Image (cartoon, rainbow, N blue to C red; front, side):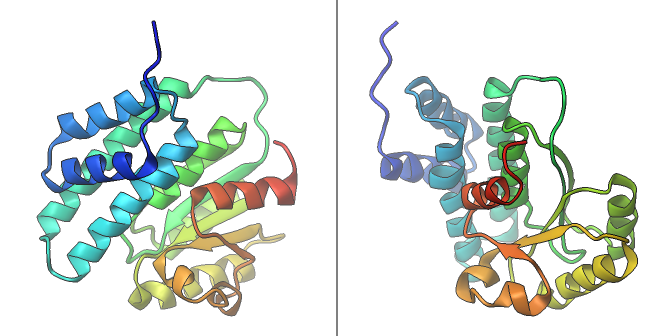
Length: 222
């Protein structure tokens, strides 16, 4: 079978964004399936399609150009499309490597970026525990103490949630013996590169691929 020419990143992004803005899951899946058939790898889909599309959805929501319901539909479609693409390339392997626990601040519901990091690390042999949105501080500390991961990844999408993120970092630092490396991300960190250090984190990244690259550099191959 002859493989079709891979579409440009702009074309993919625009087609996918249009589908999720319309709430059309079939069209969104079709865009991703055709991209995969054309040879577009998972990292490129995550960083050049899913991530910018969801950032645009977030912007539209913040500026009241779409409703909360619209944002929820777009997020649900994207989560399903990510799972679909991930399952096509993931293969179970023996012998896990480094480990990571990922969570949003306990007031934060935007979790797609963390899911991307976990997926891409799993493909590289890491063992990830994805807690998702609105994770209470106490529950996070218990999980980190139980799992003893190499890394904890935390995310916030809007500035009002930063105090809760700071609390999570402080609790991990104070209550966990030999605390893990702490990676943070989200829109506020894109706007202020020094914010992560001021909050007590070790690393921040612009996107999921950069986060994975930084962790691979820090720990080596899993």
